[in-house]
Length: 237
Image (cartoon, rainbow, N blue to C red; front, top):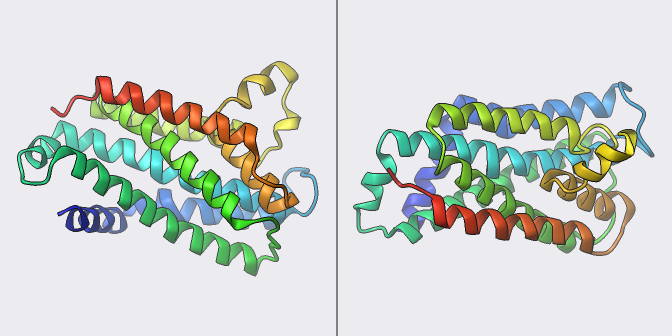
């Protein structure tokens, strides 16, 4: 039942033009555009700097923005209520959604990595540490998505999720180095999950560092806090 529901979730994402734009087209355009055109000064080779940031952006677009919007409207239209009345338990539904998110992220990473390699990207470091960061980031963003979708109206979730996406794209170190921000702002920005994921992936894939413990702890803190709050406040109807 979980496998069937996960398959339905994946097909729903891939058949939705807006979701496909968010999960694949925008990250590919950001990667290709900022890697090829010298719009901003970045340390090192442009593609080596931008590729890890776009991978983090892809994780956020699926685990947070797409999931929050889809779940919010499923709750509004009674889809979650009806699914909750089927033999599939609610824990199974959440597991299916998680599996769907991970599957879509795997597709995103494969496509973006292929594009980046074609543009001359030379990743460094241990891919296992990158995988650990991606999974921690997925948990953090999924918790935030469920917290938002389970408490706000669908229209409010749509607006808030897109706003947060744009803010994190601008402030999260995806295309603009965090070092370019004033110190007071940088202290706050470094606590964002997108900044932690971007910085951690960049440390591993661009600089060949080991597991970035600080960034991982930030992501785990967000995951624990948001999932705990979502579990207490999520409304299925």
